[in-house]
Image (cartoon, rainbow, N blue to C red; front, side):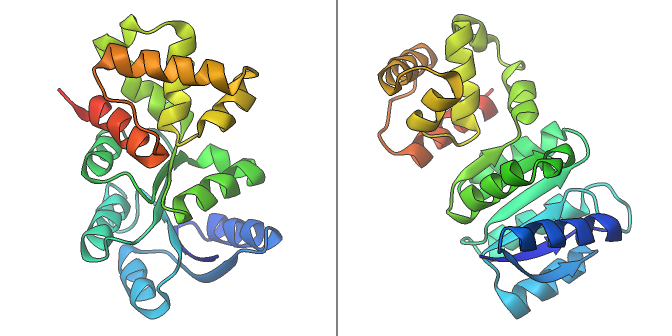
Length: 212
């Protein structure tokens, strides 16, 4: 896997580069600005970009805007966004457009190298990787979530993170058949048609989250 890191902190750029090297992942460029992202995209065409939401010069939304522009120009571009705190508006805007090949993690997750690399690999494989805290903040905005049981809510959060039924079963220590029943119940309560395709399932959940 070939990765471009876009992060203004030199310490974090170096730390990410070393971390990915430990997992035999090649960092082809590590740059501090949105303009650097654009140049790296043209020069290297990496498998996935790791992009800080806030970049110079204003440290507001340069990173997320650069990521959105990149995905507009190159629909196949895969992006994992990193943020110091949950930027709910940015998460909603990006996910409303297209969630395939997209991740949104808090920077705290980088401390767990295996978890971070797992998310990166899911994004590179055209999947979705959402930080559990991002999912929770999106979910609590919706009243319909009250119709779900506590277990269904756990399953929905893991679905929105991009987990498969088997992965959810392992995480919750239940059978895969039990997860399938919970998934069916979730889609029934939310009025969403079930699908055997995991990425379509995530898209349906995110469509519901972004609906009004």
